[in-house]
Amino acid sequence: GQNIDQPTEMTATEGAIVQINCTYQTSGFNGLFWYQQHAGEAPTFLSYNVLDGLEEKGRFSSFLSRSKGYSYLLLKELQMKDSASYLCAVIRNQAGTALIFGKGTTLSVSS
Amino acid sequence: KAGVTQTPRYLIKTRGQQVTLSCSPISGHRSVSWYQQTPGQGLQFLFEYFSETQRNKGNFPGRFSGRQFSNSRSEMNVSTLELGDSALYLCASSLDWQGAGNEQFFGPGTRLTVL
Image 1 (spheres, rainbow over the protein chains, first blue to last red):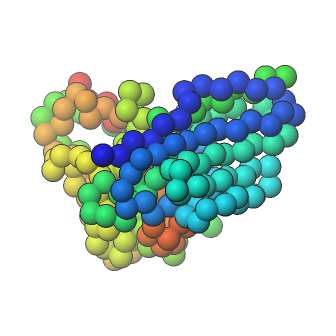
Image 2: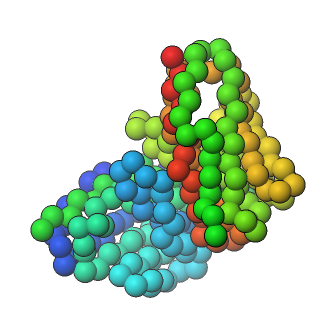
């Protein structure tokens, strides 16, 4: 079957660095997405990883290890506006369920 | 450039009825994906349409269907509504299909309540 696990909640303080982990078990892996969703709003695309390694985009970086079924999203220099839910999603290249989402990690940033 | 638009924004239906939701993607985008979001299940993928063809499909019953028109606008239909279909339905558009890893842009969603 397929499964994606993320921590339910995390807390951090402004200016800090936080790492949100995502582990997955799925066949036909074809890439992993990270999305950010503020309460009451639609998700916003953050990153897409298909090859092993680190992708950096400003304050946000995403890492993937396909052999370990593991990814993380790294947020640096945290700001209050980073308080949101962070969703990890895996895309499969097989027929049937193509995009599987984790339940999301709610990050609370305090001053 | 206009963003993704969804209509209607809010909808109230009763069990057994059917509903059609509409999504207009960003101009030039050929892929439209639909998602259901509930507090209990989180965000779940319904289906993706690309160039008028269903490209990918999630694990939802056949009561959920969709289509895409030549202008890339998409509709999804839910027949024989059940209470559990109450959710936020989101659509997202991208230049290429999901597997290409293009950025997806989400619409504001349609809040469906089934009584």
